[in-house]
Length: 291
Image (cartoon, rainbow, N blue to C red; front, top):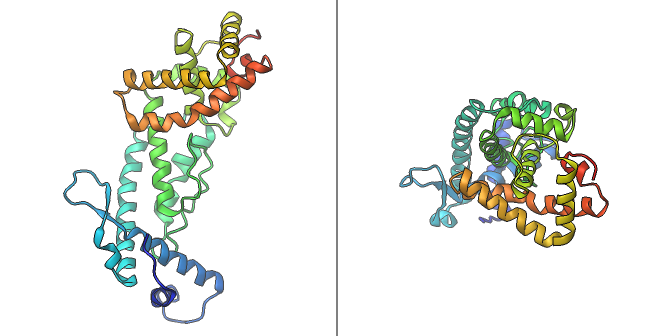
């Protein structure tokens, strides 16, 4: 990561201040000064990466000469990279919208279809590139954490793309039935659609049940609960992970990126299965008749 002394950053912030105030004032509030300093640093950190013109993809590669850039040069390079990244993400988002399905979940629709355009309309790469504007209320299977700015939006769209890739492999009717099995009012809940469907698919694979969205029978719930208690939490996690690997290998051409993303749900799911079995609540977790 590039590091510069404060005296190298001050001229950049001073220039940003002039542009911010249209040269009408050299005095700004402390909060604004901090925002502009964060903007400068955010852009500088992005100067460590540039598009490799020799690659067909738009992946970034580390530029060895970045450490030799002055703070001003690093800022200018970083700013250019951010602007180009926003353009590419806009294209990516448009492509995603062409096949996006919220499966009637309101938060999913509001975040991706209604909310996301605001980022491309109002994102300020010059004065506040660290602000991604949106609250991103819909919970992706993997959280973006403390990532900020355009990087947060890039991650979020990548995660959404993974989830939509997985979901569109199944009939919409099955997905809707599975969501209704989870909760009759799933449309209004702040839930991750992909996780609910993934868990249903994996359990059906485990017990050789047709993937239909039908409620688990009492016998199936009994069988699952007995197996969980017999195997233990660690072995259950291994079993579920192996099932996921088989699913991705057979149904998604061994897509490693998709496997890595979906695997973030395995530990939590196996933990929930174990806890549910301890208290005879597997039917509530999976949607089935009481054992």
